[in-house]
Image 1 (tube, rainbow, N blue to C red):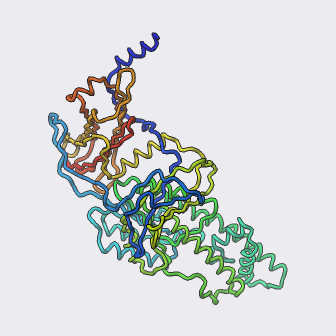
Image 2 (image 1 turned 60 degrees about the vertical axis):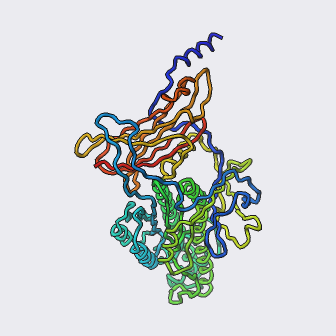
Length: 564
């Protein structure tokens, strides 16, 4: 009894409020095993529609109906984005209110050229088309970046069209495996996989026939046949790791670009310019992880098939020294399978992230225009798989529209996901949730929070910028314990430049153990949490996010300041 009395005494003597710098976000309750499925529904004319409700959808995991626990409709350009000039919450000696608002970037698009798989002829065509698209002009709030899957010839997000065009003109094919198509025997990554990983006798026989022809060996000589077979096997062994390296590097840089876009405060669009590429079985999990990352980062992956209108194997090259009707028929079959797999990859990336696929058309300029226009409506469906085994296995997803709403409607949705091999870490989920709010421009007002800014010029070139969060405590939810009202506020303030590039940020935890009279006293129920930044003279975009631990509600506000 004495122990409890002592504890109550300590609580009664504890300070009502303490603020500390945040080392890691608080451990909010996480949404366990929530699978998100972006869905775009189009009418018979191909136009996206946004009038459907949750009950209009059927969502199946491995053919089993799932309960949709999350449902939202995102309308392009409809997010509540506000940039207003702010007066200071409190005037302090020597301080001035923030300056007038400025034009800031709100739309971010990355052109990712797959130079690891593009041929020179395809690259020239897509480059010309991209330049025509850029020449039509950019919106004042739009920024473009150019990257490659090899990591070469890039330009960061900018509105400088000359820099964008110069970066695109510097792109060249960088494949490691491409030369194998002209070696003896010619060997594609797909054929190498069939020979080495699947022990495909038919593929090996075709490669052996190629080796006989390109080496001018006597097909009736058993010794020559052995040499040709050995060359085919050796060629496959050499081509496979080179193809692996190309594919893995493409996947790594695709993931890196999504990570980069995730840090952009606004609409995020990735245009993946590629002929597609073959992905071996072991790498499909990485593709699923990229789709998950894109969904959580709100990045749309839009794929432009750089091959345009292409036909595989319709007119075989009879001038090829290794040409023979039987061998060519086999190789053409595998080329078609390779092309199909490549297109399926582009479709999987686009459908899975809520983007679009442009293929089988030579109007590449029109393709760029289409893919840089976000669908007007995107539905986000979420479900929590029941009794999910943590085995990393593939789960197929299908989304259907119930009749009569489903008549003459087409559905573009994620096709599957891989089960995790371990449960999600709640602390990591909390960090991601807060980060998503910080790197967004959506205004949230679940909590009563006001954003204000102040600055003080210390010299001709430097200033101290204060970001103030004013919170009305009477509107918060508190937990009652030992005569106190408990809640913690996470306060994150971040600065960006006008192009949306992250500059600096700070996080604080406000621990509240308030007495009843404090909450009842209106004069003391409004608190101000101030974060100071040392900055250079110039313009800044301010983002403020506040989250409470009890109600798990969030507020997010935008501001802009010009320090003359």
